[in-house]
Amino acid sequence: MNADLSNVDWREALHSLQGSLIYTVASQHISHAACPVPSAVIKAVEVEIGAALPRDVTITVDRS
Image (cartoon, rainbow, N blue to C red; front, side):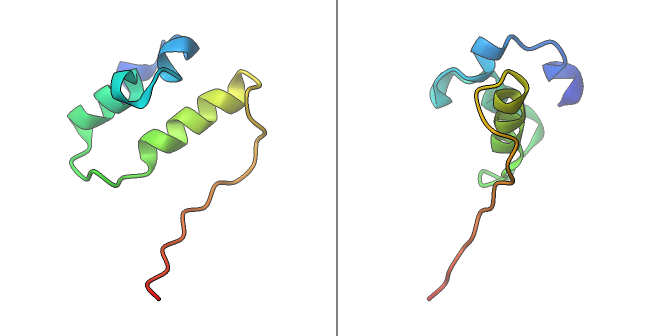
């Protein structure tokens, strides 16, 4: 996935979910639909361009 995303324009990375280059490329490499990696890549791009703070992101599943 890294080779396919090494020179991504940030505007493409932050495009709508349906047209996201990151999710398109991820779908070619990751078979698990709930994989958090594409979301993490988008978060990293946001931090890199100054659109988000470099804060940890947590996904919590509560079965109660």
